[in-house]
Length: 127
Image (cartoon, rainbow, N blue to C red; front, side, top):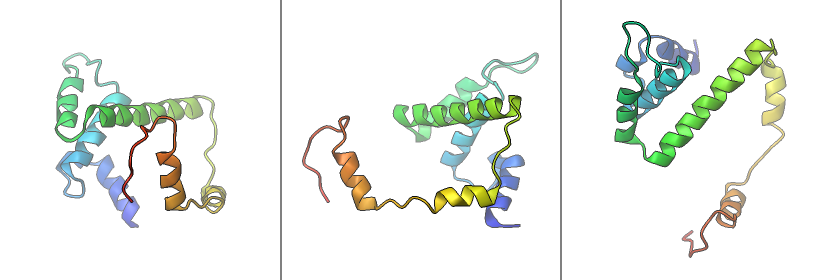
């Protein structure tokens, strides 16, 4: 079993008691679980769990980061429901590897681009 396979197994298990994840990672995974399993709705005998999960997130993340975590989790929830319901097959590794080799990004070019974007306040940048 490779390193990533081991982590996947830990996530499937009791990731909250695992030593493989930081408290920050556990809080983010818990939030994704609340969103994915709709634990914010509650169930008979099971109260909604989103308030406790949100309180935990706020210990480690600011509001912008929480929105981003929520958007990423929401996107993947959408994508899974979309592809599963339409029975869309996910490409296997040989196809996916073609994409990773087609793009190379120079970190300096990326930083220069981001500093010049319309949403970035114009200011003196330190290199």
